[in-house]
Image 1: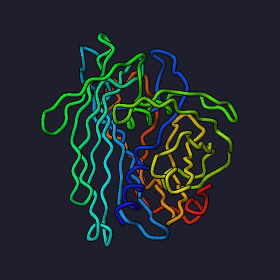
Image 2: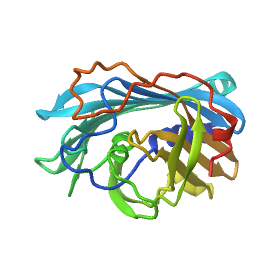
Image 3: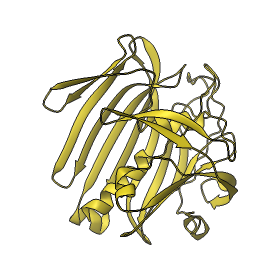
Image 4: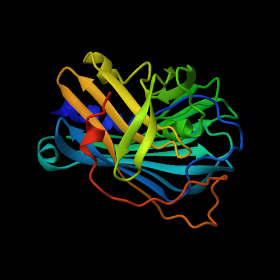
Amino acid sequence: MGKKTTVILGLLLALSGTGFARIGAPVPFRVGEKLTYQIFWGPFVVGRASLEVAGIEKVDDHDCYHLIARAKTSGLVEWLFPVDSTAESWLDCRDLFTRKYRQNRSEGKHVTKDETHYDYERMEAVTKNKKGRLKRYPLDQPVQDVVSSVYFVRAQKLMLDAEQTFVLNASDTNYVVTIRPDQRKQIWLRPVGDVPALRIEPNPTLKIVAANKGRMWLWVSDDERRLPLLVNSELRFGNAKLVLFSVASTASSSTKTNGSTNPTVAAPASPSAAALASGR
């Protein structure tokens, strides 16, 4: 059960994208937006996850979107192997790369707590663990973390069969991730209705997916909102999904958002059977 829950948690953090946004261009998200997902293992709901734009804060004197990703198990899984995870990212509002990343994960009896500061003046990343120990490693370009990459892809102009790359930093290692949307179709979800969507299979994929000879796909709405709709992973020991459950925004029209124009949508509801059937 521990391995399965780790995959489910990893799916939330794997909603990542590609391409290079125009500096200062409008983005399809704004402060106050919150996306909530149901986590499925097979046909069973085993938890809830969310992605939130909590505010704008300064990091190294630069305005950054404060992004928060949460995931928590429920029901039988919570009793057998509880997971409670919060990951935070500070995404540069102008240039759309990460400046700070913090995680606090509890998986069973294992706890991971650390914070990474991306210092682009010195071109190094510094990670402080829960015991206060520092680890430094070099950077040769701006990078994304596992949360900022969600919002980075939403700011891109994705096109069917157009391959692009970006650099993802995770656990003091930089990965060149390749993305090529390979399918486009309509997906119906109650919070957003019937929307066009692009399917993306990141390469490389999550380590635990690869280790279990699995594959993972994500679906992003092919419209101005660029909403992460669905993530599906097929593994030798089962199937895990994240399905969009609700979309909400609490921001006022006066909130500073770097030009975002996405509408407010609030429709908490269960995902449809049609959406769950469209994992690939």
